Length: 475
Ligand SMILES: Cc1cc2nc3c(=O)[nH]c(=O)nc-3n(C[C@H](O)[C@H](O)[C@H](O)COP(=O)(O)O)c2cc1C
Image 1 (cartoon, rainbow, N blue to C red):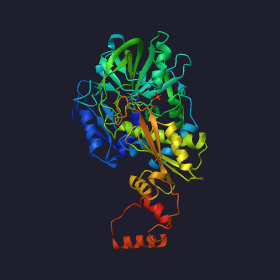
Image 2: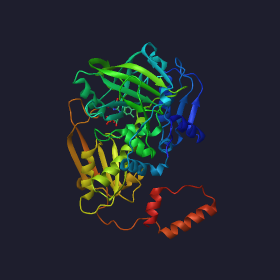
Image 3: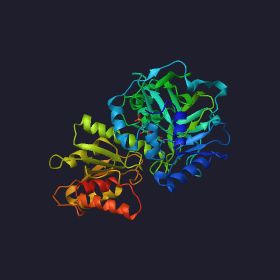
Image 4: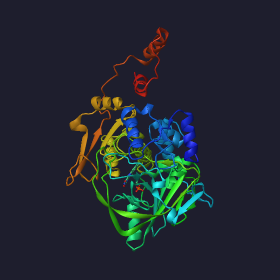
């Protein structure tokens, strides 16, 4: 089971040696983000960790980043499963969503600041691409709701700090927060909005799930937790917010009030432009005593954002293909961890049942998602091992026969496509279509005998990679 609070999770992460405390005072205008950039650019995933900045200049509140998404290992711990169990956990959560439970007394409201007490500089909000960004922004779950149905939504939308009491939330066209906004502003009403900081880990992990409009991500979080997520009524706006979060910011988006937002570092690895976004006025900051501020790292990949978005959406895609599209031949789905679960590379493992079955699955995935490259392989390929995928693409893929190109795709933010151009997608069917004969490895009994000799000789120990297991099992 996952952890009830972010604080409980951070304690477990620290026990496992996956959280580093930084005691040196850091300047939020450049230091935490630049240090986090070194972690992602300098260290392989197995060596990364959550960063806990104990002293952030200008605020009494510590700042944490990377704890959820530094690597698949931190992610699995946040979800409360082993790394190999992540996809199953999301499939189960999507099959068994749980409605939240409303409570009266909440940790996140131990301290309530309203009116003149509201000051965003109270929080250790960093600059994420120092030297290039337009200013500080919040990266956390944003709660909104549809005026007419009352159904809430959670998504992570970058939120620029304008001054002590106003922000601009980067609600992109098509996002559910954006759709919700118009159900209010079209009627001339302000939209209630809340930012949920340092929530129970499953709430953060679920927030970036691409669910249909009208399905609240908090129900997926409940499914992942195996229990209802506690919610409490916000103090100054008509919204329910996760009760066990460390900090909540409440506010209202006012119709027609716009400001310039950006430039900011984008998830694809380039700086974005300046856009016009709606202004929200902050009405309250509530928090647990001695709160912890969590900021998700994005910008140049790999990042915490790309890990979080790729992993949950791979699990949900597997569920949709198997349960909703009836493609039971599919055994696994992996989205590369470097492109935010959108516009990136998805690899599907399956047992094709008829000619061009893999191409059909590839077309389905291309149509259902914003992923740009779809590679389909057989079940004997480890889809998390890029060298094994490359082997399949070299040994089982004949480009002129096995490629499907899809034109006229609109990708917002694809840096390979000019502002007035359309993007495209590619499907590579790398499943075996001809009988190429036996593998060029000794048979399994000889390989296992050799492994015993290896140990007797005292050669260096190693864990047999999945790639080798799959090959030896067939040899
Ligand atoms: C750190 C981080 C920052 C993000 N920033 C934005 C953003 O500024 N605007 C946006 O539309 N999506 C952003 N996303 C992606 C959305 O949160 C994600 O696609 C989510 O599923 C959208 O929820 P929705 O489909 O309910 O709108 C961000 C994700 C992360 C992890």
